[in-house]
Amino acid sequence: MAEKGVKVPRFEDEENPLRTGKVKANSETKPADEKVNPPVYVRPVKKESFFEKLKQQLTGKKADSGKIDNEKADGGKSDNGKPDEKDFPENKTEEHQGQNFSANLSENKKPQNESLYSKLKDLLVINSKKRSELERTSTGIPGLDDMIQGGFIKKSINIIAGSPGAGKSIFAIQFIIDGIKNHDENGIYISFEEKKESFYKYMLQFGWDLEAYERQGKFAYIRYSPEQVDQLLEEGGGIVENISQKINAKRIAIDSITAFTLLHRNELATRESLLKLFDLINKWGCTTIATAEQESDPEKHKPSVIEFEADGVILLYNFRKKDIRQRVAEILKMRGTKFTQKIFPIKITKEGIVFYPDETAF
Image (cartoon, rainbow, N blue to C red; front, side, top):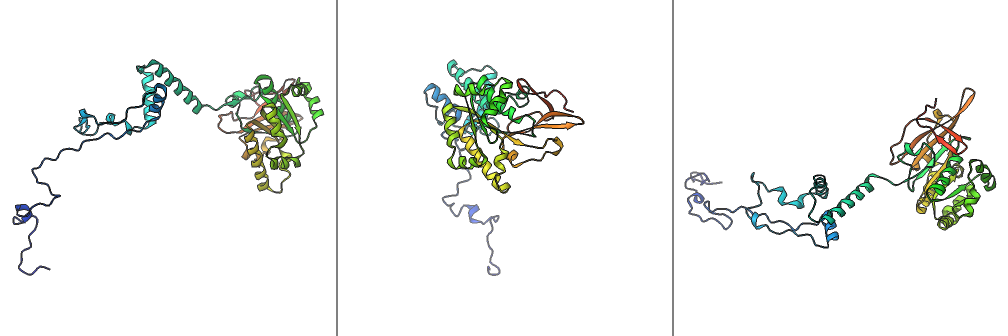
């Protein structure tokens, strides 16, 4: 503590040596009358955005890197004293630049290079379509494609579940036939139950000559016992993969996958085997449907492990109402797709299954 009676100088004191100038300011202290120049904004080296890289590829000219603008040596400020945003385009995101470019197109502000303008516009349109649309595979079922945005998503796995007599097998082979006849997409039908000869004979009533398609190398029928599927998984594809490559298959139908799931002890083992099977199918790059057993009454439907793992689920019912039976269907699940959510009637005709989404089921 200071001795009693000794006056300790304060900053506000007139005798304060810093105020009187008797003590020299240190090197960091600047005289009060010295004018401080405002900082000069130096434009950083600008990173090339997506659109600049694209322009460079199309024109062969390298984008201009950022330089100090002599005309903006006063700090690059606008009238309000703040840095002008237009002088710092590197602060704008690529999305913002894309929006500006699109706005310029809508206002007919075309670049000087008409060829470059045309190429950029085409590329933007293509890129936009890729983001907003998914490739679709026709189901081959009249009335269904319009309900699911044009068909199944390409390379997806979809379950057709239903009770006996609901039309599951007809749906499955109709999907394969549609690919062969209308889209130049060959197909494989894998059955765990029905014999080849009886199946071919039964499908002739719809005008589907499977034996002829097989001779042409467009169709293959493979009969597996459920136990052989485990061997299929261990082999990583085996005969199915070989045939798929041989005929260049794009569609696969499995009838029925329920027989395969019954081999396993519990739900966990079933889920693990299904995931292995689905991974194998995804490796083949085919759009796939698999049939499964389900309750005949819509009110008694219970979700199964199969439905959780699949990309899409369509339920077919063949239930009795008083003294008659009626076939109806509903789309339960379809990933990445807007679909009609209602139960509607279906019919099995001479040409196969037909969906009637505009009619009332009950």
